[in-house]
Length: 111
Image 1 (cartoon, helix red, strand yellow):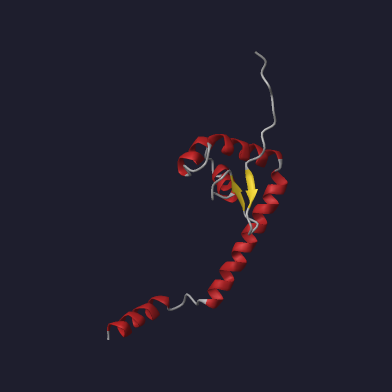
Image 2 (spheres, rainbow, N blue to C red):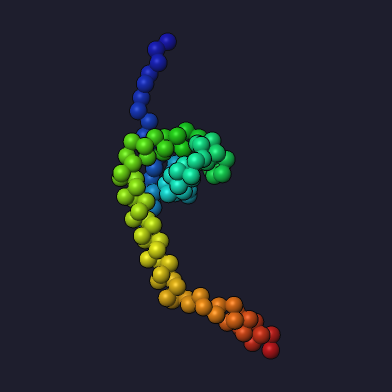
C-alpha cells in the first residue's frame, strides 16, 4: 500500500464582516492565535473551544507560523477596529454615571 500525500486546505474562512474564522465554527483566528501566543497547546485550545477540531487548530497554528507577518498585520487591524468601535460606543453610551441612571430608571418604573 502506498501512502498518498496530499495538501490539506487551511481551515480558515472570512465571513461577510471580514472576520477570519477557524473551520466551520464561530471561533476567530484572533482567539486561536492569542490563546496560542499565551502558551496554550493545540489540545488546550480545543479543550477551551470544543467546537474546534484538533487538526484544524494544528493547521491554523502552522499557517500562523508560516505567515506570521501577514497574520500579525491582520490581528493589529482587528485590534484597531475594536478600539475604534469601543470609542464610538463610549461616546454614544456614556459609561459615567451608568449605575445612577439605571437605579433612577428602576425607581421611576417602580412608581
